[in-house]
Image (cartoon, rainbow, N blue to C red):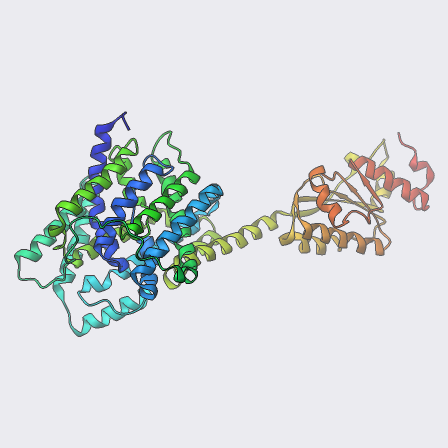
Length: 540
């Protein structure tokens, strides 16, 4: 923190200016109120900055978490949300101690992009009631609530709120393209607040805010409700882990030499989510947009994120009366613009064009995010991506008949070679022999023509599981029942345990380290049965 304090302080003030309307907006949008959003930004922002695994990460309330919290507020009330946040923090600490942070890197890019697109859509839908100036309809499904708000607006239009929301959104989007370093969000919100006060407008405002943070308390905690809140807490913890580690990866990519510690990041986010509910805050995660602003404005250490929290705390204590006059429609405009800026059209286009499978995973994850919830969406995206990946890997498995003449021991005439090929056939298995490819392999192997000896060359099998070994055993048994001698060569030591566990190679008539040894054995067998003349058996 001592290396570049001036840069860090400037970056922290800039991020705080950007974060103020977002914290207010996400608090209101979650159903917990603007004060909860500010408390989260201050407490979680400071704790995560001190104990997290990234030097540049900025944490607080986020749109993704808001999407998860809306149904929890509707079902369990504010006390339930605070309890869920506390439980999620404990789960995150446990995940950090179990060192599972490193596994988050395996989430495929189409799932992440589809998830982000779906979140952007849900955030935009959640702002429709405030942007139209109608009371928020009952329900926790963003699409249904937005539609009911549109119907309410059609019955009684309120153009003041529409004008405020659209003006703020347009100023933010246009300003970001014109002067990316200028905090147009706060400029637009201040202008909308002045207009709402100076003109005879009837736009709804945030309302009274406490002049400071409440004293820490566990009064909300109801031990009897912990069991019913476990599932929502797991969902919140999973989302916090996913979004925080993705944000840390983004921060690493924007800098040179910065690398976050994923397990320490989970630990810091866990402590932040334990602390925030004690002060009335909602569950928090790292915020990708605020982290990006932090990096772009020159932050070099954790001092910037700490400064952001301190500046917001000063606003809570000194400017609560002013903040309470901000129109809800203005905050809706801020979040509408945020939702638009979350969507990276270039990334979506690139993934959609990459392969059909990537495009399908992206689309299904986005639709599931809007129609279901974020955790189910990620699970669906991972399952579909995994299934398509297995299908692609399984297609790489090949069973090819190969020419064994280069491996034939000794010197032979063309007539002798042709005589051997009439009775011996060699197959090479390339790629993985596992459950997704095994049955196709079995069908291909059983199409072997009427020969006397089959040599299976296994040196190029990249991986094998129990299903693949069992299918190989079945194929060997079927070939032997047809009177065909089955030999194998090149079994890798690391794969022998799998084959031996199901006795896949127990039915072989011979197993050899190399293909020439297997061919020598096959030729001796054919000579013994009288199929080949004895003089062919003499090695050169």
